[in-house]
Length: 88
Image (cartoon, rainbow, N blue to C red; front, side, top):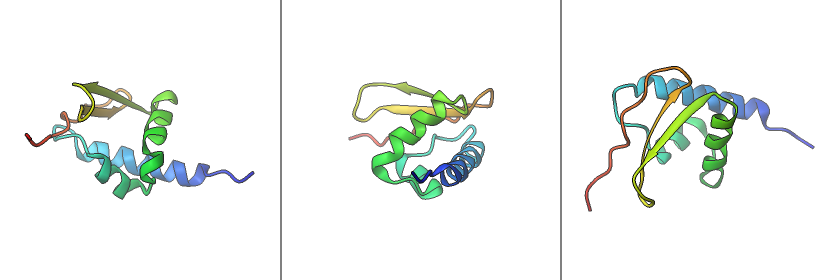
């Protein structure tokens, strides 16, 4: 069975760079994360959840779905701001 570990490691590195750039700014949206990491839309939740489980990234959610607000950080790092949402 073929593994995607090198691809996922590069995507995780890209996400950590993105988080560092968004400190004290709104958290990146799903579209921005997909653009930076190359992770497919259908696998994004699984990808982010895997990083949380492995202790690489911390993510907090606020509000009800949809849409909810999110912020994230590298473990022990500085939080991004809450995701900016436009009013309806």
